[in-house]
Image (tube, rainbow, N blue to C red):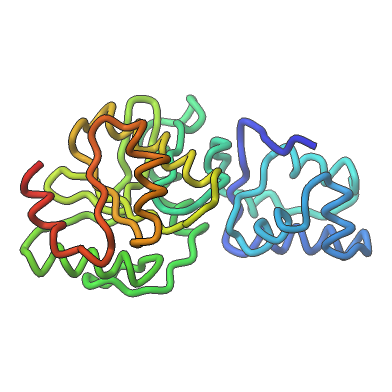
Length: 244
């Protein structure tokens, strides 16, 4: 069944998991059986349970059709966000929020969602929480070369929003780590095409050495202006930035 919907639900911290577990508890169903009942894979359900993905509004509504008597506190919901908030790795493109929200509220909603839906376990050189050591290493290289950066700044690209991993000297830097997940690389390609439209010649991708050829084949082939750097060659990053 199709789980796509114009909006997704941003719950208060921990309440998405609570809501889904309450559904399973009241229906007396295992994760597998509950996933089948709402028409999704068990893996998708697990992603919703651990907060990796936001719950689509249509699935949320379907739960009330299945179990109308389920108790729910409306204060558990912070806001509703566009469908492409479903995948939460930093830098994924977010389209604009509901048109009845002003820019200040939209920006706050995006920033709050980014903080609440991402698991960041690595402490960056400026005390910011990052996804992994690879991002921390990029930040250290930048600072050691006296290049100031913003980590995951909220940026607007026409009608779209994104959180690039880094913005340094007005250059966008993204660290892309997945190896062979095709959907991931399709989204990365679209993201860099968006960057290239609004920041032509101002984008750098950092990848593990094993992903270099994949990045060339799946992204660079479709983006006019992009520099791709291997993680084991990060010493060239500062000169690449200064050369753009």
